[in-house]
Amino acid sequence: MSTDLFDLTGRRVLVTGSSQGLGRVLARGLARAGAAVVLNGRHTDRLERTAAELSAEGLAVAWRAFDVTDEAGVAAGIAAIEAEHGPIDILVNNAGIQRRAPLTEMSRADWQAVLDTNLSSAFLVARAVVPGMIERQHGKVINICSLMSEVGRPTTGNYAAAKGGLKMLTRAMAVEWGPHNIQVNGIGPGYFATEMTRPLVEDPDFNAWICARTPARRWGRPEELIGAAVFLASAASSFVNGQVLYVDGGVLAAL
Ligand code: GCO
Image (cartoon, rainbow, N blue to C red; front, top):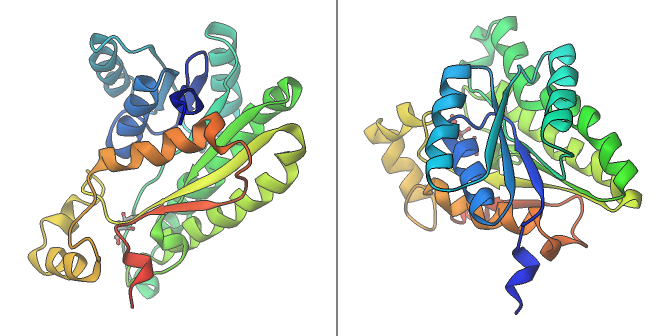
């Protein structure tokens, strides 16, 4: 099997929400596969620090701070990236937050913040990036969904609604942009130990429950998502469109 299938050399990828967490891991993994990476987040200091760390490894990294929920900020940010660095060939819509609460106690603000960041941002950023991909007649969009695109659990109703919507938005994007040689797919992480899930990892009862519930009997390691990202970002997935690839240790396969 030629490894060229998975080579991202000469491609530019934007990963939203990539100054830390899974986004940072995905950005580093895609850069190690040959891509020129553009980091994104809201906090300039974090972006500078992460860019310096990845650059010190010899990776091709740039960054642009903008809020993925701000329509004007997204348009300006994408225009600046493409003017300064060149066209975006691969978009990874990774930005996401959690605001856990029972639905009957959830504020409208927490509902809206999760829907805006985890769902609407993918629409706003893709709407700014994809016209260029259409013009060039090639591109990749990867939406970071979740096992909560399929199942929920108490206190994550806003998150599950957003990630469920992101699965369907992935399909909607795939059918509209497929004729332009743009493949749009999702990655659905199961339970991974990150900054966002730290409270869960450190909860002995939750930790025990998740490990028992997952056929792999453990939490995922963030770097275990890189293979799926490289696959969906590369020529190896040129006829894959509208799919969500779950990387969950088997949890969705189990009763
Ligand atoms: C939770 C977790 C999950 C995971 C992840 C799974 O509260 O149950 O935050 O939502 O973060 O999204 O893909």
